[in-house]
Length: 410
Image (cartoon, rainbow, N blue to C red):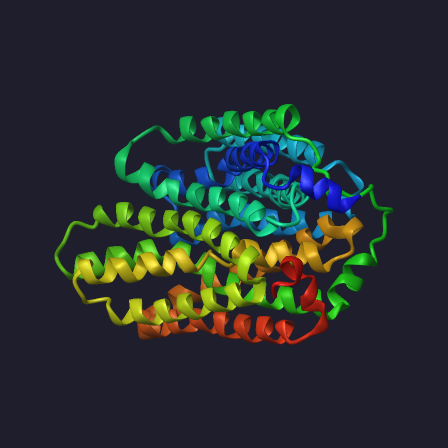
């Protein structure tokens, strides 16, 4: 039966149309997160925020997301509730809490709880979206999940371009993101259904999280993902600051940093899709390992070029931006292939929860290292993540479990 379904669906316009609508819906839903990066500089001035206040405001949505994903994983929500309904409901509830932030927030005491709540609801947008993508493909699963991560990567880059080119009042920016999130939920309900490779709803089993973490294959795939996440979000967060410092040291306009930062992060969208294409053909462990070797090397090289010409520094940063996310979707695709089919949603959500929890530490650690020793050691510290990730994926490659990855292409 599976072979017949594969023949009828894989590579068809129906498959790519569903994945395209899903990627668009994810992008629109996750604008609730992206909008925060665009408005924080304005709020810093309007509310007179200290650096600590800025840190809590920007981190609150991420902390909420981590809490939401852990709760959803232990409750098996993505596997006992329809993924498309969970995504749509979460997008709507997130839009409401986000709109409340735009209308009601005048200081941190109101702003932080509302941003935290928005993060909690976003936990029902991103992981269920990846599970839905996995139900639409076996042969092209790396590309399917890569499309979602690529869309989110471009969305993550957009605030840097918005800040460079526009001066829209922050409340309007936040309200617009709520409208877009509602639209994303509507798209899922209207144009996206469960794919032919979906499983029946799973029974509630809170112990399943521990069983999944105990499995050798999923444990190594998660360790590879953690190594990747140690680098990724700290890089996205601090490369714009790195660029401002580099430009100011050269006596050039710091405003150019926003455009370069947008390019460096957005190019990861192409990297994510390219990584999916290659991983489906060459193997998950091979592509993730290669991407982490290049991204880690790029991190070290970029720090050494802090004082170099922008013409020399930018290509290195573009390579880093391309490869730092090229492997991201493949860790999630690997989890869908290594986990019990009925609990793929739980496994994906738990992986996401652990990864984003780790980013809270790496993001906060970078400025301390920069203040103490400079960018070279800070970026070298980020490169430790790929070292651990490569070791985990090469170990997974040597195990019998790896034959389940990408149709036997390890």
